[in-house]
Length: 149
Image (cartoon, rainbow, N blue to C red):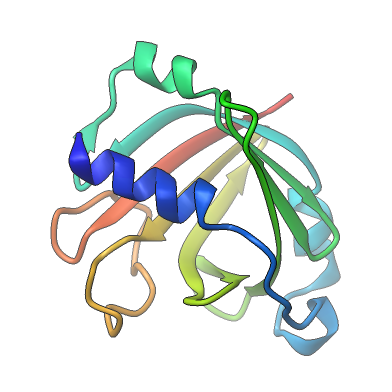
């Protein structure tokens, strides 16, 4: 449970302010930004390889809203954090960087109306990006499955 709370801090509560380059300064195709545009609701979460119970996921009510190079993360407690993000579509899976200090590194894939987002939450600042869309204990990654609504 402690690691799950840490993931929420990284994925939700820590997303404040920050400035970063928009899509023109990245290797992201404008179509990739358009594909993410909209509101996505977390329907499954795995932290460090362990699934979070469905009831807890529903209770958290985590929502990601993408619009151009901006991301807002909403939680059931009313917290809304906004930042900028950039995409690197030259990698497989595609990389997503949320601009804040420290930057949040993730990989993602969109399949129809589902977004799978694997976030690096390891304590090691040199852990880099996740290499696949899988939640692991080491280096610690969290996998969120979100549905567009």
